[in-house]
Length: 234
Ligand code: URA
Picture 1 (cartoon, rainbow, N blue to C red):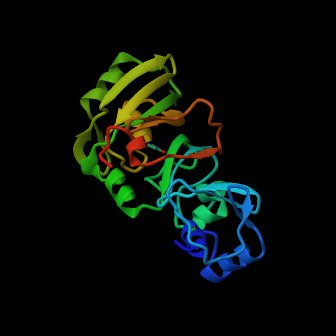
Picture 2: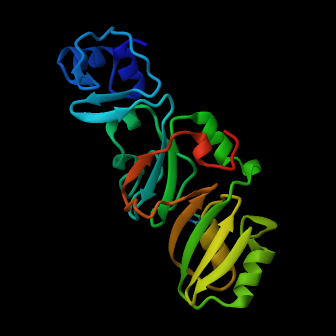
Picture 3: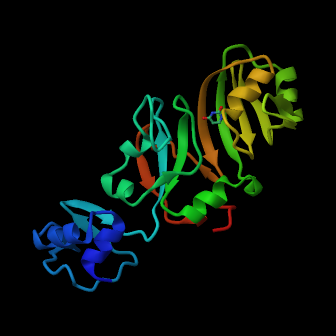
């Protein structure tokens, strides 16, 4: 693929802007400055250096973000910055989107991708992809609440009960809840339906992925491919 075309596909601007980047000497491959925008390069496994920063080429972007509190997953955020503002500009230009949504005050594991088919598959209710939430509650967690969460609680928008795929107390005021659906404010509403209240919410797992302990809030990393969400067909 021609270098400028590859840069364009990776989100570095219009074809013309990408040609300009190369002509201005801002693009290197393996330490060599490239000066021909039409040079043929093999994208697989390639690491470009653009304006001094390394950029591993991925045909489709799959990003794991440790979402901090105080940012919105919406494309048109209303009260807080978008999670997309935490990513470098080329990823935004490529149209990377969150896979599902976390509330503004929820922290933890959020996947983002520019692969529309993956977003569709991983947000589909049919997929039953497990999501693990660490919940801090206002009142002590008791056995009756856990039994209700496991057995099913009725939310205000649907008479059919929703149940946790798994649920355990992890402390006096904390519990771990696994859901295989993704309804609006589902954890908060389920916990409220047991007579308790969510004070803090953190997602620690998505599919077979766990939030890496060394990834601080606000930081992100590339995932190598859909198979990284192991247990989910690519
Ligand atoms: N359930 C909620 O209530 N909020 C989230 O952010 C995610 C799941």
